[in-house]
Amino acid sequence: MQRLFSPPNQLTFLRILLTPVFVALFLSSDPVLRWWSIPVFVLAMLTDWYDGYVARRWGFVTRWGSFLDPFADKVLISATLLAFLVVDLVPAWTVWTIVVRDIGITFLRSYSELKGKAFDTSMMAKSKTFLQFVVVHYVLLLYVARTSLEPASEVRAWAARFLDHSILDPLMALTALVTLATGVMYLFSNRDTLRQLYG
Image (cartoon, rainbow, N blue to C red; front, side, top):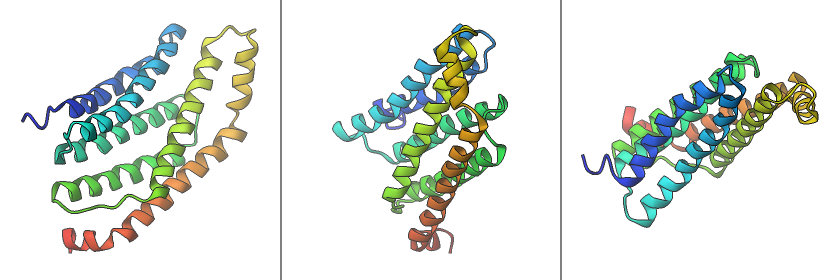
């Protein structure tokens, strides 16, 4: 039980707990609360970096951590994308492609780690995660600016211009296709491990 609630895992749990807070703030009708969704999201993302640092620096690398950390990441990103879908920012197929792929691969990876089997992570998969984070930050910042600033604000007009579907739809399509491709690569590169687990 102590290993489950180790310092890095506490940060991971914090990221999970911050997710519904972020979604509630983001979807709020109050412009001030929508602005607060940005620092809450940034704080949640910082726990992702810091829990890994603490685990490696102080020797808290555990199987629970290997399971919870990627799970928390996907909870945050999936919930954020679904919130974008609620306000009709992004195409539905791109969100569901990313969410289903990420949850499926995270389950396989976490189950593999819990069973003591190595599940390799490719550099392209890490690049996929970086791409997702960049796109999510892009959409979040511009949406809050577009919906929370005064109508006459030049920044609001600029944000609205760059949140146009002619820009967002191809950007989300690229993110979804890269996410899907890395999922296929995951399965192929870890086929031997999958055979041992499910063969």
